[in-house]
Image (tube, rainbow, N blue to C red):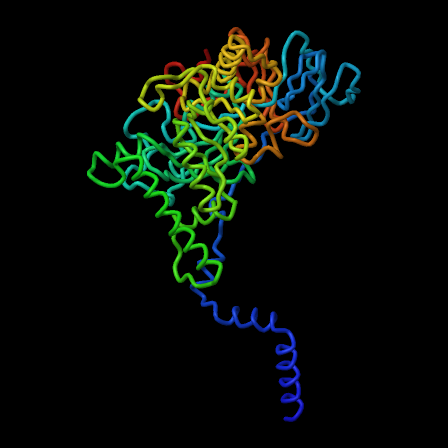
Length: 467
């Protein structure tokens, strides 16, 4: 019996000699099973099951290449294999013998187009009340809802976005009725039986927030807070205070129950979930940036930011993108001071520009929207090259969505998400000729069999129709 007592004594001495170790052991002993469950939950209970469709090694030869990062190569060559971009170069790039060679002379190659703001699937086509699942408009803050649980994978809008717009990835957001509308989900634009089969592997979640008219109108009309813009900010601040307290308790092992909404907000404060904030007016965006500083999070992008041009310096300093339309204007009071030179002025200020759709038809014409914004900038004396404008549709949205390491530009090792256009994509006459996602040819204008059709459309008038 003397030996165990001796060992225990040695252990006690060791702990006394290492106060940090003793403190850690003490904390581990005091964390209850419930607190452990609240802290160590599964953050990915609906994981991506996406698997790329089969592809073949492909060489696009002779095209004008816009690489999505501002670069342009005339008479360029792009090599795709095993789902990745293998190489991008000029006419002298060596093409391996086993690659399918596509003569792309006279055509243009870009990365796959990315829409940072879409409601496909949760406001699908046809738009009927039975399929209207985009706004959980029952409380001013609903961070506990996840957009992916509303998305209908059979929405025919997905195939139209692929065939007409070259859309290869998109972010589905909850609507803007609420100050905190819930989590977004990033998708690959492929057909799948389940939403999990479309989820972009590894993409971070976003939290949709909204400021301005929508929340105060929806809840003010119900006789509850918020009914004013000061109410909007007050409810937000109170909610972030709760989230900060929740996070502190979680980290200290003092939580006894899980809270789905608070888990999302704590994820924002941890830097794991990105803020996608619907906001029109410059003064409100500035307030939101201050609120973000107050609680220690970052706004990844302001969406619909019609007055962003007034605060380009603030947005640049914050590293916050502006996701905007080319010329939507005046459909509500807070969009009244929109100008078509918005993108150009932001670009000149060095701020991040993204062209978004928020529309099942607009998503099919994002290239034309970007061209309109480019033209308006040019008329204002701001000349932006075609190659740089393509970045607004590819690398910039990828950055604001947290997927720029995987896609958004034509770089060796990135996902082979590629569009071959039959002309300059900034021409109103140009259309996608072929679209690859992870190296798989999913749309070919010359092959009707490569036009995906959802089960919902089968046998209906206009099945798989492409305009």
